[in-house]
Image (cartoon, rainbow, N blue to C red; front, side, top):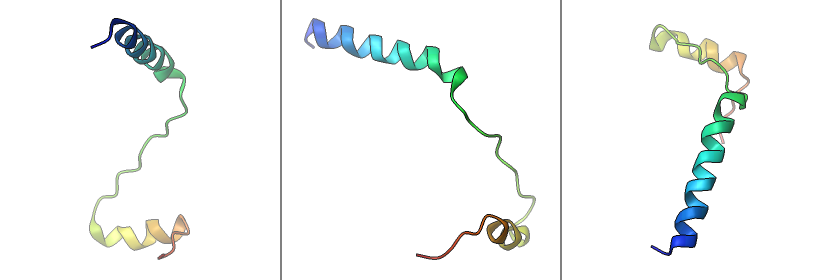
Length: 49
């Protein structure tokens, strides 16, 4: 691989590794069963496309 491209890729990866803790991720809600899915879907206002 081209050395300059390798340096660019490693710099890009390091930048994301440093930024990862600051990105706004949400905690997923674990649904206990399949029967509870319709309620969760309705609360999120999901629609069929």
